[in-house]
Image 1 (cartoon, rainbow, N blue to C red):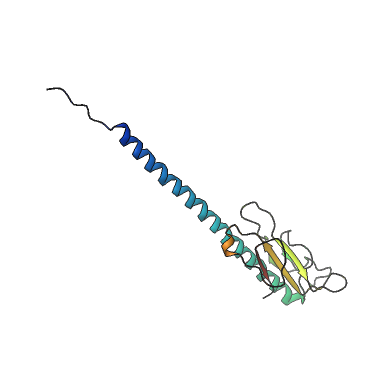
Image 2 (image 1 turned 60 degrees about the horizontal axis):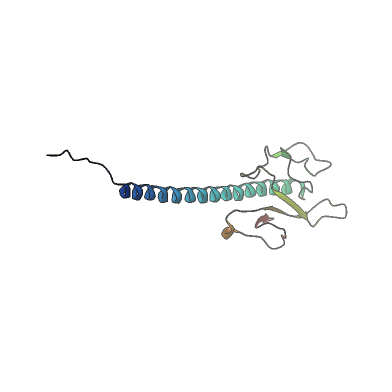
Length: 149
C-alpha cells in the first residue's frame, strides 16, 4: 500500500492568501479612516478650548486680542499693550495634530487702530469633509471654524 502524501493544493493556498490579503486591506483602510476622524475630533476640541480661553480674555479685557495666537502661553499680554496684572488663559496653545501647525486666527470689529476687536474666527481644515461647518461671518479657505458664541 503506497504512502499517501497529505498537504494543501496550490489552489487552496491561493484562496487562503487572497482572503488574508482582502481582510488586511479592509483593516488598513478602516484604520486610516479612524485616524482621520480622531484628528478631526482633536481639532474641534482644540478650537473649543481656544474659544473658551478667548472668552475668558474678553471677560477681563472687554476685547479680543488682535495678535495671532501662535505663541505660548496665551496671557493677558497677548495683543494687549498695557495689561493689568498677569493672567494666563492657556499655558500651551494647541496645534494641528497632523502637522503641528498653528490654527488660523482672524479678528474683526476692531477700532481705527486695529485694536479693541469685538469678533474673531479660528479656522482649520477637517479631513472628514462631511463634518464641515463654517459659521456665518467667517470667510476663509477652510472648512471648519469657531467664532464668538
